[in-house]
Length: 396
Image (cartoon, rainbow, N blue to C red; front, side, top):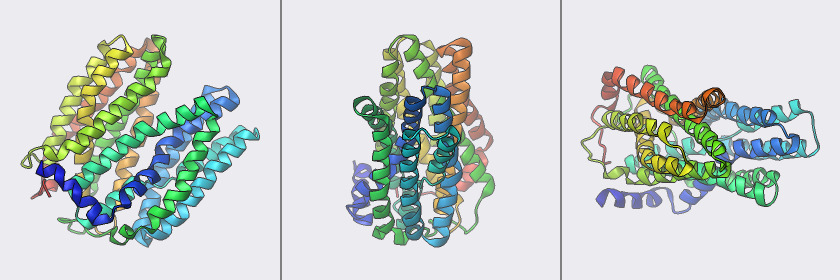
């Protein structure tokens, strides 16, 4: 109970308005890809054109997010975010206008790439602020829960608006949220603490350890991509394609709840050990997805799987605190987040190809393979991660 009460410190540290502002400012990131896909497919009737546009958004996010965060580390979050968020909102509006006016597809794809390139990874910047406050494990748990909630809510919101009104409405709403809450996030008083050196940092960027953590996030992204594509293939094969999004959202919500409960884990259980435990859990549970034959059965499995996801992510981000030198925390967090995006694209592509080749069961092998790779990496890098963790205070 004391661990859960530690969440009460967060509003006291950053201010009561910070949590809702940061949450609503990051929501568009979870809306942009699906919003772009639905918009382009509706206008062109081509899943290939829409899929490429959504993929370019993801590629842009993976490239632009770390760059924007690095600039924020160097020049301060306030000026960089005040510039990047209005530009990002303008790019979304321009994409909607281009599609609505039947612009050439190359223009549409170029604007989709620009949407991704100008997307500010609010979660990475927020984590940098919490590190500056020394908020510790509760803040990392909250941030992972917030990420999971937005990635469950964002696609559902975009899909619902597309069904009820128009595919353009979801992307315009995302642009509006960026335009309003991006500057509010930028000017919030918490920006003043961003970039402070985390406790235990020795001023160096530990590149080998960072590469290991990025590898772990790539694997998790591959897991997400495989689950998404595999469950979509399962739902389509069983005639209930519309339920796929609900199952994936359920996994995100369960993960968010598990993230909030992570402070209840024993303080003596270090982050490297937690990573091995939860990676092993995902390796053991993921093959059950290959055995289900209904969306209902998949929902039961993803509930169990969801309990392992956020604790895994929280440990990676927490170890990321120790990797970054002073003034590089936002960039490190953004690189880790980009690892998930790149892994998602690879996992989704592989699972989609396998679904075409051998059906949904073959596609659902991708999550297990991805997490098996993560577990091998964790065992191989055990000594490095243990050294990185050092004398960590897990209940701080």
